[in-house]
Image (cartoon, rainbow, N blue to C red; front, side):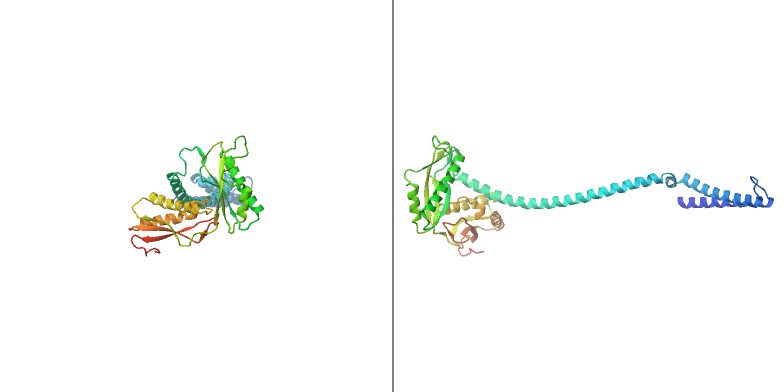
Length: 356
């Protein structure tokens, strides 16, 4: 509404000024008046020009008085252009920053997803390892006094002996096992009296290394050779060692039952986890006693944390007692370095329901 009024006002004033200019010009023409000594014809033309100037000037003056935008356009246009150019430059910079922030945000979101996946994997592994640690503590395999750096029967090094091997090669294997065990013993603090680079001593009942090497070379089957501690050992004392040889044979047959647990959905998940991990530790110790090279194998390598978690979820979801059975996943021999088990299920009181 304001703009309409302004336009009508300007039109009215322009028409009024034009009318006045025309009247004045007519009077000057009739009376043949002269201004500044000009001829009447040119005097009339001058009045017409002045009238047009007055119309344009009045229009601009009126617009400038009533409109801030007109005043800005008339007197601040150059400054506005400079400010607009600076604003555009800032806008470009902000857009670039926004693009960079979007890229960083996307990367952080991808990293967050990857970390969540890794977190879940580590959580499952921690569950398995904590259960293993609890079992070992409960069974006294971490001595309570902390005085011993080696315990009786502890495996220090292992190697696979080839049947019919050259005696010299066997002797090199024995030397390598002794050197490996010696470095381990020195690192833990064992020492031969008066020597800083030796920590081992052969048990008194053990034959010499050359004689033992000759005996191994005559073996008809390959096997696993262990170097073990023969007694509990404290720091700064000599570590007494001996060798144990296990000829190769089949230890577990595929599908063989290795252990079982009666389970129900009543216990807490932590208790179920401890029981399953305890059963896995017992199977591992059985394999170690039979000569397999699995002493350095973690329980999560025997049965994955994902499988354990799934088994616990199934136990909690079902409303009946079950028997969780762990069976050998394949045939395993003494010289095998791996051990894998699978879960089979059996309903309590139904020995034929072992495959569901």
